[in-house]
Length: 236
Picture 1 (cartoon, rainbow, N blue to C red):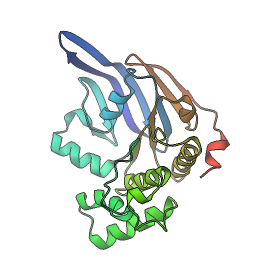
Picture 2: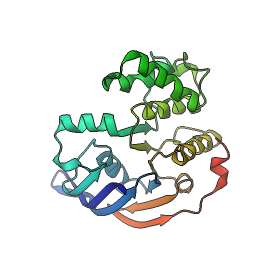
Picture 3: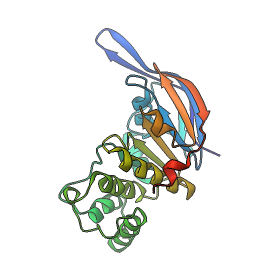
């Protein structure tokens, strides 16, 4: 069953007198439990597509359904609720609040989701243990390494029990070895049932996933299954 179904997505932007086709008729589907990379150089349309998949933007034309919901038919308020309940985001820059502890950062989306204090505390603690930070719950972001901060961000993305995890250049701010560890963690989460889409310019990062969708100039130019490599999963 497809978790994401995109049909002829188009996104136009006006830049002065010029119309830019950021997406030019993009169609694809992503089944549940897929682990997929969307790859392409700057200007390829991958970031625009990620924003649309995340409910942060809407297509100019075409149809996008996620978990049976038509994104184009939603109001801004409905999209905000949908994002909180359906999608977990992981960003290159971590986006952690510096004054909050790791535990409090993971709890934050559950506060917006109306989860009661006892439950969100227990869930946040469990998730931090799951990503290997059980002994760092009381640490603030400045007391954590880049890799540890990204693990907190992944735990936060999982806090709302999302159907989809979207990761935007999740290894871009990390050194090579730490990036491999984070990709290994994504692989582990996927094996446990998570649907993950990574947006990246890096073909090596894309190669750690099950499938690569390559974009150029607003078009999908290839959509291929990857040969799985054990080198990423072995470094969890």
